Length: 518
Image (cartoon, rainbow, N blue to C red; front, side, top):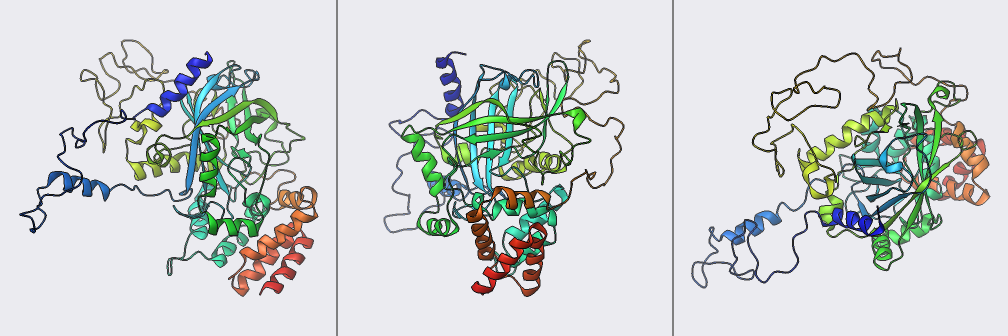
């Protein structure tokens, strides 16, 4: 594509759904002219407002319905649009069109906190969502990650419990340190993420000054059908900058929308933020014997074992035209994958593939993918029809079922003999992922297979002892004890044991600092 055509495609994403600006006189949503926006109809000068003032009733009724349910996690967010530029040749690993060298793909990013509600401060200590959508030739591809490379849990069945523990008590509607720490300390798999959360990374200075991660293990597949496991890393070119706990708390009171405002203003001023896109690549054959379970979301892969491979970069250079339509109603979803990219046996990822799409169906309706910001650039051909707020529809001559006797076909494996039903052979499902263990096809409830160095605290210990300097260690202990305010005596003891398992030095320092703060 030329630069001019790239700009056209990127702007086309933003233009979708936008009405022509201006206009001399207003109309009702159904197009009829409106007499006035300023005076309602009454029965005489001093009489009551009449029920059949159509514009008044329509205006108030719509106003009452302007909000949609907020997301359960990641409710508070902001975002921008831009392009992905692929500068390196990674075709040996994936056939995905957006990752071919020289390709420029329009995209958007939404950045968020996890636990807070709409209106909560951007700078509260929290993991920060880092979600990207790429509008590719083969449909939308979404990477829904965070500013940390790991997560609190490895199994999606625990996710509602975790989010409940970070939200508010049912009795009084208040957030509660005790239930947070009670949950964390009863789930030692959380230690790696909590060590990140309570460290400097829990309070990024701005959206622009943080790295992002796909976090999960995904699969890339090349043209020959060879599969690889990958992890995404997005490295900020602006440099990593974080607030201290005190600075973050102060900014929460001064400007609850600090991150939102900073990103918007930077783009308006032409100071476009850039992130380098890199991946770690693991051959499928190496996964089974790797020292950590490579699909465990509480673990990272060592960069010594699997160095970062350059892919390209993305730039955010366009602000949304309308925040509600293009940020609040964007429906990012890890089930949006494209040919050349697949899922993995990561249990959290597989749970999210259902849960995210389901939440969007609840929030904004079963036809949420018809909203302009959620529409792909390529033509959609589907048998899905009807449902609340249907906007797009199939041609009247098209059947609503498959297989059929008409020109409307089926999937690419369904055959083309007069578009009739084709008896399927038993095959793998490479559109989801190439199964690394084709014999292990039984559905079971089973824990992860333990690898040589697997335990719940090993990487948290390494992060604390070998990555954090003395200043970072002290800030970590200080941040932990700040976050412990209000814990019960029982939970307090569990917190100490929790951090003792990471490092006796850290556990000792947490005890000392918390005793001073009581």
